[in-house]
Length: 456
Image (cartoon, rainbow, N blue to C red):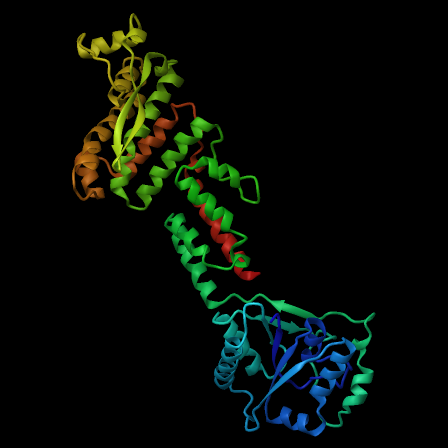
């Protein structure tokens, strides 16, 4: 029906202020929003004025005639309502009225609420009704012409004279004093707290899911940052790059593609440790250790193992479907007559057999090329950790805790993570100490944006 419906308590300065001869809130909202139906809520005192001189309907009809339209009225009389300061009464009464109005509306109709007219208890009742979020209304506040408290004069009011003297009837001098209040509902407030809790434990997928259930006006300041954080956690850098460069700060310290992937994987590993996801933590160590040792070889000793390997296709079954993957393995022809093969033969007494590339092979190359005791110890420790816990996490049905890791490796999860951080200094990736805190920097930005959105 495309109706604009106004529900309005009637206050002491309605319809026109007798002190400044300007619109009261009721008349001013009708002048701006042009409702086709007005529901007037009248207490005992207001109803007495209405019956005495019809001042409210008279002025509204004069306005409608001036705007070449008609208005449908519904008057809710509360002749016995004299205790106009009781909040509980108004909240429940207003709720019943608004619920009934909504049952009679269709999707094309719009309900607006006047939260400037009436007593403080009436205004509070409407504000709380909207805050609970049961009914999608628009709340309109009207400032006074002097931008200070109105004086209420009820006696000696001449409605026809007031209409003629009303300065707001001068279209050239008219100033719109209406302001739509963006009041977050309790539901929004609660969901924002839930989002902050999810962000605090690095569960960005859950945070995004909650944000998607909220009106866009409340999440527009931080939603893209949440989506970026979710993509970052999934190591989905294609999606991350699409979002970065808009209004989202870049929290990824390493920019170069291959190096960024390795460092972000390590940050991801650190988050798993913070979340006490120990099984996922130990499963994720092997590919990182292989990549790091390979980068150490290339950076410190100019050994690029890709020059000595080949790719072999292998078919595996995933969820009942056969897929083809590429496996990297040593190539005997490329290794022939090289220092690399000589080092392997020294270690394996001439019995080195080409096959898949494992961290043990990279450890051998590093330690047979390096005189750096710290690097050799780090390589030993990481290889030992990987060897001790890899099969346990991958093949055994077992609860993995911090104690499990300590018993198997002799190191805590934090100590293992520190060793990973230390070996990064040998990879050629320029990582600063505060780069390791970039997830927490990102979280602080998200939470700060949520707080600022709540204040808008």
